[in-house]
Length: 369
Ligand code: HEM
Image (cartoon, rainbow, N blue to C red):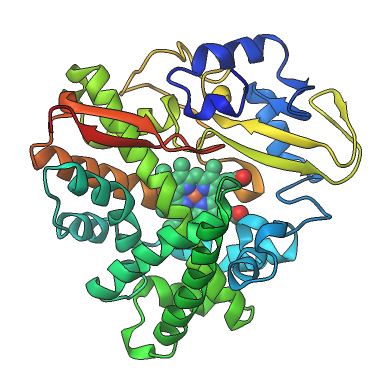
């Protein structure tokens, strides 16, 4: 096991405990990176101004730097620090906070879910982005296109993608750019969410469009993983079916997070949680390990759906903390409810995790057909 393989391992949590007990912030000589595993260290790294989301010498991954996908990547708040993060964030965060969550439930239940493997796949990997696209003002048919394109675009965010996937990601970025340009050009169809973002946004149109695409790509895998991991929790402990879905999902996001880790790149030599780290160092931030730190949550290895004072790093912390958390929880809860209402039997599911360096996202098939 290593801290990257852990993300898609059947049970990484004992290994995470071992890492925490060796010290919250330790150097892995094989992977040549620092690993933050305790709640204290994770919090300190994510709060530190010298810990940046991209390495200074490679703001955009080389493999995508020359195409449209790279251009979009370079403008995302998620991939920037300083003004290029703060400016879009100051418009998007408040607008995301004003979304009517009843509307989200209605959008999810309006979608057709079939009780087979395809239906489950679509509910996890297509539905959530369709909901976000619809909230941004796209028609249901357009939202389906946006969701397909987002799946292709998201390939540029993974170092595991091959040439073919990167080329498709580039084409998808161009098409998404076109779709959003057309949407912005029609003021009479602007949704409350889009109008709220535009009202507050002060940058150029390209940055606005990149970050609208970013809402879709941030939704895509993370929501699929949360929905899938909730189904796995129900499969492991069927008695959890009696818990209210929202409460169940609140514990799933802590207990078995879809985003297991994130990274930071050290811009200047500094002390983090009492450890000296040099400029140029890379830190793997194990959000999922910190969630199980007994200093953060009592009985952290117990799944307690009505856990009092739950604390979690699954949506990050500090400057880049997820501004879509409430929306994500609401989409995922409504989707799990719909999946169960459609009679999908979780005890008939088999699964493997999608290959990934940081996402814990089950891909399901049905045992016996
Ligand atoms: C279960 C679903 C989700 C999970 C687990 C999740 C998790 C995260 C995490 C961990 C980060 C911080 C990454 C870092 O600091 O390195 C983040 C950032 C972000 N998330 Fe989410 N997210 C989810 C869904 C969403 C949704 C639905 C949206 C919006 C529609 C969204 C929008 C964003 C944006 C824009 C950022 C970048 C913020 C910034 O850099 O300032 N996320 N998310």
